[in-house]
Image 1 (cartoon, helix red, strand yellow):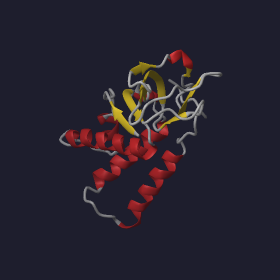
Image 2 (cartoon, rainbow, N blue to C red):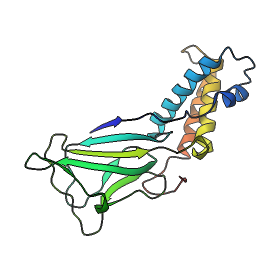
Image 3 (cartoon, helix red, strand yellow):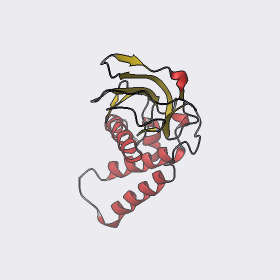
Amino acid sequence: MLIEKLSEGAFSISTVDRVRHNSRISDKYDDQWIVDALASATDYCERSLECCIARSNWRLTLDSFPARDEPIHIPLWPIHQVTAISYTNTAGTTTTLDLANIVQPVGMSRYDLRPRFGINWPEAQPPNGLRIEFSAGWAELAAVPATIQRAALMLISHWYENREATLIGVNSKEIELGFESMVEMVRPGVDSFAWGS
């Protein structure tokens, strides 16, 4: 399995102004540090939650379809839309699957790609015989769950105060546990909850 990001999103997990306000940073000399920290916090949250923050395009490559009508788990959320499915058939020819034959995501949760009722997956030739292109992430920063944004601000404030790679007593552990507790609150199950568009 290979998952590739085909385009970058238009925003980070928060804004420079919000970070400056949250961390009580009065001067603007640290703005470049904040920009870099926002990129790191976005990446950290995405990896921790296996999610995508800002809407972007992705490709998932698999060896083949599962048996019959079994679902294909997309290891990223929130999935917005499946845009293309291509596969190498048993004759070695690249073929495009009609998107009318799949169930598109509902809401903004985790997503298992399924064929519509009565349709079975075709046979693809491994290796890397199946390519699924999709968009994932929230359309705007305001749509990102507030808990994820707050967890990121907490991380950035901690990084601002503690710029060395050392643990500082119990406070550092509390930040780590607090972050994990917050993001676990918003980790969804498959197709279980619609966060909005």
